Amino acid sequence: MEAYPIFIIGAIIVIAIIHNVFFDKEKTDNESDEYQNYNDNDNSNESSPDYESITSRQIAFNSLKSIGCQPKFMDDTTLLVEFQGEKFEFSFPQEQHSRYVRIWDPYWAGIEANNPNLYLVKEAINSANHCFGPTVVMSEPDENNHIAFHSRYDIMLHPACPDNDQHIKTILSSFFYTQDIVRREYQDLGARQAERRANRRPIGFDTVAFQNNNKSSDTTQSDSPQ
Image 1 (cartoon, helix red, strand yellow):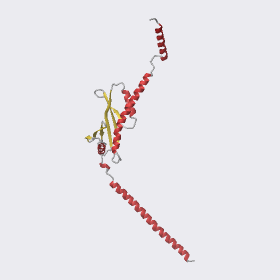
Image 2 (cartoon, helix red, strand yellow; image 1 turned 90 degrees about the vertical axis):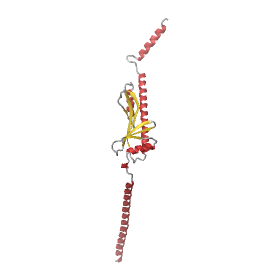
Image 3 (cartoon, one colour; image 1 turned 120 degrees about the vertical axis):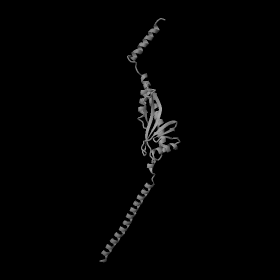
Image 4 (cartoon, helix red, strand yellow; image 1 turned 45 degrees about the vertical axis):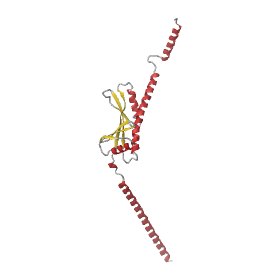
C-alpha cells in the first residue's frame, strides 16, 4: 500500500515531463515559422521594384507608345501626342518624383464673344463640368474676339498600377465623351428655349379675345360687298 502513492507521484512527474517536452517543441516550431515568414517578407521587400526610380514621365511615354501613339517631349515638363486624331498635351510638374500629370485637350471648339447663344454654351459647359471626367475651360476672348474651349484632366501615374496603358487610354477617351456631353447639353438647352418661345403669350394681349376679334373681322370682311 505504501508503494501505491509513490507510483501515482511518479506517474504525475512523467506526464509533466512529457508535456513540457512537447510544449517546448511546439513553441520552438512556431517561433521558427514566424522567423521564416519574417525572412520571407524581408526577402520580398528586397526584391520589390525600385518605384522611386520610375518617373511619371517614363510611365506616360512608355504607355503612350504601347497603345500605338507617337509621343514627343518638347521639354522636361511637356509632352505632345496625338490620339484618335486629337492633339493632347501632357504637363508634368518640375519635381522629379511627382506622380501627378495634367493632360490638356487644347482648343477643341470655340465661339465668338458676341454670339447671342454664348450664355447657352456657358450653361452647357457648367452642366458638363458636374460630371466625372475632364473639366472644360473657356479662354478669354482673343484679338479676334474669339473664345476657345479647352479640356483639362489631372491624374496620377504610379508604376505600381497594374495596367497604366489601359489607364491612360481610358483617360484620353474620356475627353471625347466630355465634348459630346457639352454638345448634347447645348442642344437640349436650345430646344427647351425654342419651346418656351413657342408657348409664350404675346405681351399686352388676351389670347382668347385677340382670336375672337380676328374671327369677327374676318366675318365682316366676307359679308362686305366686293
